[in-house]
Amino acid sequence: MARSDAHGGYLCRLESLPGGELSRLGRESLEADGEQSEGAGLLVSVAKKVVRFAYDAPHTYGRRGAQWYGKHHALATRLSTVFGVTVHAYVFDPDELEQVATYGGGHRVGGETLVYDQAEIEDEELSDEAFDELRERWPLGYLGRLLGLTRPELLRLPYARSVLIPLDVDAPPALEPLFPEHSPDPRG
Image 1 (cartoon, rainbow, N blue to C red):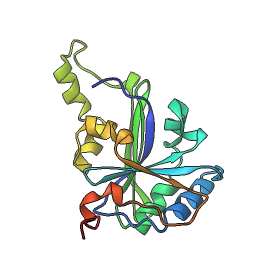
Image 2: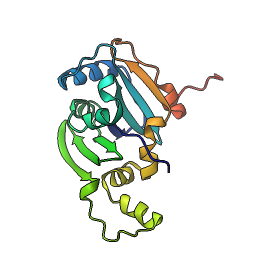
Image 3: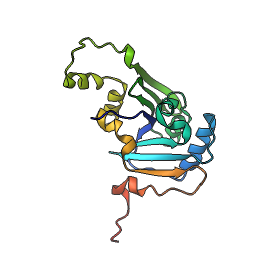
Image 4: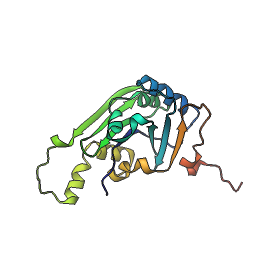
């Protein structure tokens, strides 16, 4: 797999996604995390029923933006309560670290951080296959297994089919493209 860009967000597993409250939840959570919601959006992506929520705002772009998700978990807290699911806030910075913080019922219930420079690798001459197996035990590999994805699939989530929800509008977003198996048959 080609080197990935840094990214972060909030992940959970859902069969479907009621979108009516997402604008409000995103806006309130962003403001609780000390950021302005004006002009921001919430990008919702889905792959194999794993839903990724990530803000579309200047403070979430690039490496610095990816690492923003390491300390700002208001949306993970709210989503875990509203949808009654486990939500994982994650950071992937291929130059520095990977981090996962897990929330259930509105409370932090776990998490792990791996700083690459501090990773204990016993054999400096690992084959590519052995190194890939090692990374499967790192935080994002373990998270991928929990969600039913491989590590490469999890790292490609920012490029999955997506819908951008403006936080300035309270109208329910059209989320049907994300869950095509739950969409009404257009043929009647």
